[in-house]
Image (cartoon, rainbow, N blue to C red):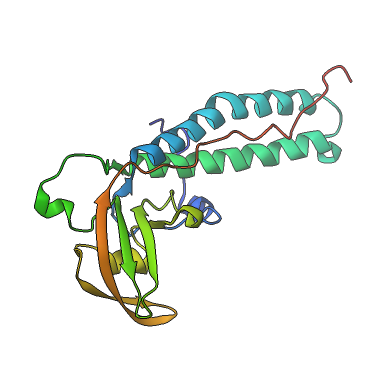
Length: 206
């Protein structure tokens, strides 16, 4: 991974707390599925090889057009470059810390029935209501698909349990007893990376 976007000062650390991104426990690896890892790499490559060069070229053009302090194209472009570089630094850290774990890897019978990273778990609450979740990386959380982070209270409560076990969930909403019904390991489908259309475009014929 390129180090071009690693931070040069402690002040930049705050900039890497991306909106909606979960922090990793200090010193821990960034456990992630193959699909999630690929998605981060695709985003990094897109920003570095396509989006950033495009915006850089537009900013260079805009800089030649009058007073920069009153040049909306120039000001917007510089702001967009800062956003891209901040995201690239964030992705660099995530990818450098990545520990790819494939849920489909063959495992012995003892481990196959226990809950670890990548497991899909069906459980019931005290009211008998059943739910199914898949334990994934912090950058793969997708509540619509039931994908929860391995550092979430629910995932931590389920870890190392097996079908038939009762576990205690301690969450901000209170304490609840859960029963593990089923544990399985299968491919985790991650929402693919879809580049957004460039919003900074300059008509160089103007």
